[in-house]
Length: 524
Image (cartoon, rainbow, N blue to C red; front, side, top):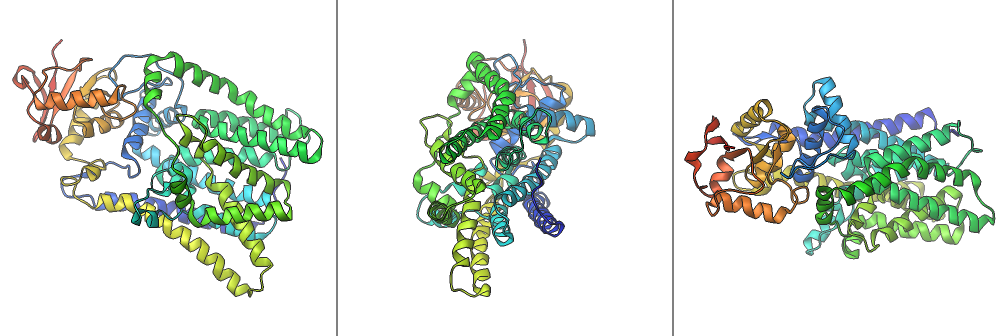
């Protein structure tokens, strides 16, 4: 593997800023835990609680010793599948270290975030030898969001407010698998910029092959984006040089060779396993509107357009062309007619930031501005992006400062003491195959806190989610006496009491009681 010329002073600068930003991303979680409302405790997830708790549920399965994933948010029996391997592996690690799911989740988030940022600087350094360009690109990658704060004022919903995988800072704040996937994408793409003569034993082939295999297991859609970028870049190399770029071709083939078995298995299991197919059918993630995309990337997006135009007009090195084709390919993929369009946006922030930095620095280099004025302009650009990120990071924390009793959104972030006691009882007395009926909010928590299945708990991972949610509400209102499929335990606590009074409560034996929360055991 060819060394990228980076001085030890550069690495110290990169490591310092990376560590500072990653630690800063932990601060909202600490504040939420320390300032939890009286009578509640922080559950450990700030970004998208439904998906965040589903990751904890997957970790719970790994802690149970499983390597085959099951949907614990739905009651139907089904075969397990070798998917979500990353979170299952975290569960095995948690069991080995004696850590709770949320603890290993955040340790992995911190580690993956640091790995991403170091890989990002190495990638940038392989694209440009100029230190000012490297630093500006890294500064934008590290901190920049868009103009979501401005879009909200005009009734828009820009992606920097709700699509973590579209931005590096939001990803490293949200979960471990988004930054890990981006790190693996960078490892693969960086190797094709300066490939070595191919053989099966060189470092490049090994790095690309292992990264492709890992990426197919961590986030398969990111692998599809990476493969598309490689194919477009290879096509450009061929037509620009009028010869086949064999070193890059071999590296691209190694990506396909090592990832194809996983991708083909994923396709097979999602089309032949009826429960997973049902989940996939309702897991629609459409692309954002062009306006929300433009506002979401904001100043970085506009500068990236200028940077791309500069490269086309003035000429560019191979690495710069790779970055340009990455951005163009990513935008095209985002609007393909496909139910999971938005999944293909992962990592798009990276080439946009690099294009923005290269274009701005090169324009400034030819401008009559003084060096101090140039530094001021680049500082303003980074500051505007960083303000957007701080705004996005602050939104969940602001929600966490509200009363869970008054806000349904805030209640998704916290757990009552009696609920935690009930979770402990379920961990000791229920089996992973048991099914619990609870309110939609509590159903979201139970799989990640206990490893036990629920009748309803997730808008996507519960099969026929809308119908099951309606059944839960009808049961607790007393409109129906039972639900189907049958459940093993029924929880009747503060949330459930708000829904109503079920029928025949007195007919079921009480197996747990704490304050105003009761667990009933359904009879065979």
